[in-house]
Image 1: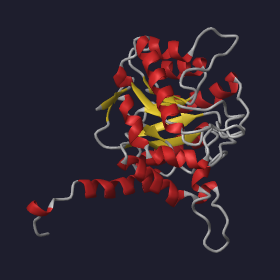
Image 2 (image 1 turned 45 degrees about the horizontal axis):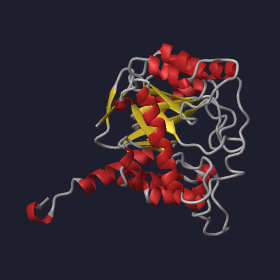
Image 3 (image 1 turned 90 degrees about the horizontal axis):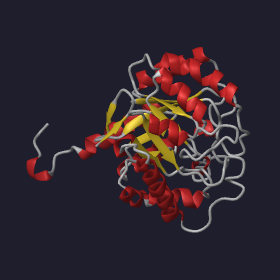
Length: 297
């Protein structure tokens, strides 16, 4: 199995690590840390040294309650970073829902469009849609994510009931519609959208029953990194307080590893080095000899 992108066929026979590059002042975890193009490109280089397989660059925060960013500001943040990142020799993904940004970064040579709106967002003043941009491109990759409502309201009115069949139905229909526009199946991965309009219990249900999402027939991209659902499950032993976003390294890696065990093909993470190390342990267990052919050493 592979993921076809603009310049790469990403081999998904082992889980791949997508390193997060937030070129934002207000992202929930690392906003302001890499919000200049120089800082962001240095971070890209560090993530590659840590073992990232893919870089995911985003200029607009989609945390709960985040205000929308105008087009020109997003382009000003993202374009210089993408222009430099495409020279680093690895697949470059851009986290955006605006068709104009999609077109601009694909023109620069970006490999993947990672869209929290699953190509559904429409600007009333622009007839161009994200689906059209992706469909017109010969072979860029795309990640279609499930999001309930929108960032301003998704946690105010979270989903109701059993989310697994609802998320699966949405992802299947969205992927089917994109295939109807001529986008090859090999270009598409699906993301259930951990934290995007789901309760804590619903998020953990998606992890526990993640294998059910594989019946859609597409690789899964999973993003548990530093999500707030992990905070309440992992309290400070001394204070009994929930962990801050920056303190969620261990639960983030644990969730990523569980997602990989349950069939995730791509893990979107902040903490690349630690996730790569954990996956190496998982790979060692997977390839360990069985008792009948065990040898000394």
